[in-house]
Image (tube, rainbow, N blue to C red; front, top):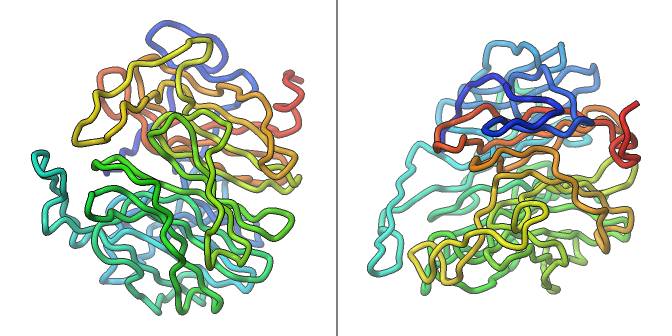
Length: 372
């Protein structure tokens, strides 16, 4: 979990061996951060990094000096370990994994985490645009990890979907936390458990979206060759319907976003490279997983749904780099129809930190499939 301040490089359009290919309908972004972002009414952007809150008035090209969140908040690496939003009433609410007391270790022989493994989930909020912060509270002890889902529903409820390392056997489970008072207090839903055993097995890294009929849909990373989805009929209080999705997926997280057009957008790593029937699998059973999961992350794909996730457009590869990892996507709709796409876990074929994917595309143009 480390943040690398690198500049986007690579080839836009053409594809050369050993270099990154970017879909020609994607344009390079000048933004020097890769999220999470909040858009303010005056058009400026906010982001949070390990030093605190920053603002930009030039589409993310430059950022203000960091304004610390709170003396007791250690964000470490903010990316897929923290999410924040601005409520309709103007509160800034941050959920984050506290790196101050972070410890990790795994006993391969016993198949359990070390007794002192810890990464706690906390929440904090600001009612004055980030000048001061309060109502800091621990939501979940033990060991928790990356999450991407954090929304405000039509009712005003805040809903965050997160993962937690459970025991006996050790595997990941997911749930939601929800708040009806702008992040001042929180409650937890039931656990969603897909079974498994290993430090990368089970139900992990969920995203969430509100459907037009009022239900919530959670999309969950698994090692089972596809995402699973769960549905809540009471704004994230309980999740009582769970099923596999038709979309194939490797063991990597999705990012799910409701667009202003009404469509859903989904970015993720598919099960195997485009046009290939399979992809080498990790050996199993292993300390990581009971099943031989695909860890294909060489391509980042994008699809849209116009029927609330019942069906999806044909997945389109928007970035490719053979042998690399282009994973942990983040989507941000900067303005209606203008979609920003980033990766927040990016390594080259030699396993070295690489520049993130950082592009923008026009929704309608992309769906038409032609360059104007």
